[in-house]
Image (cartoon, rainbow, N blue to C red; front, side, top):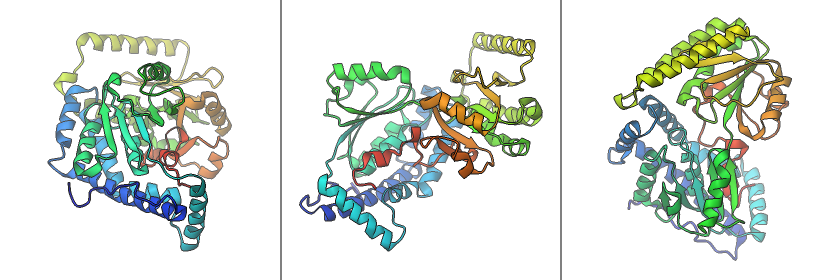
Length: 423
């Protein structure tokens, strides 16, 4: 273990709440700097196991090498930008001395009635994108709690490689266990379960864990089940200017992420933007569809014929009902009316809705918890946010597929959720 290995996060005097609060904050900052350093080392150290995990993922998952490289590059850049330390600073603030002293008073008040206890947290990770579960693991470690992970079979290599590296770098006291098999999750008296994934599997998985006595009916669950995001284009100029970013937000990761655009709202009809959007879709589609695909991922001719038949049918149907649409490969953007628009179900079909910001607000209300984020294309953010509920993420289209590490899935800041001393 190196000299920067973790200190015991529970060494505090519980009889002195003010000092304990200061100690908690100091320890969390220490963990942030340390974790950020060790994660960057995983990317840079040839002995970290990252390259092996990448090759295993290319050969043994549905991810393309291009999507894996994109995700890893994005995460590394956010680590090097200091996202983890910034995330912790956001939780208690260090803007100026007067504000810091005020915040310390609040910390003391909070800790007078509640001392910090290290909890066991079970993270049930999704596997729809490479390393999609990393944020939860980071948050648990930063908060000082104990991590146990249920790793997705769809992404079984990258996160495990990072966990092994962190154990090697001194995080063994907090990283308790990880497994792909639900039945291998140890009974740890978990205080919290962080669930990310499909809502359809939520209740059945919870029942399995209760039956196996891994959790009980009173265990606290935080569920993140949003399945898609929306974009708003205020005018033709913004749609043309940000067309590449918009299409990237649709196509990246095969459109399978909760941050992937499934619905676009604009006062402009799709027919008026046919050419620039079609060109952007062609450019992004052919780049992502052909880059880094190994022989093991080349589909059979039978599957290709089925896809082509489906594409031909959809084209013919759209033409028959005079619906505006764009088709490149087997990706479709189709204009649908607001009144009958349903929640997107197909990764490769994006709905275009002609409407204003009020239409957007109505759709946010309609889709509810299935909706993850709203991306703006050059819009006025304050005015934009005023039309939406408080938990809706409103973000720039530039960050759709490469968000900061402290972004809020389903509107929840997971570090604030786990930390007992935040204000």
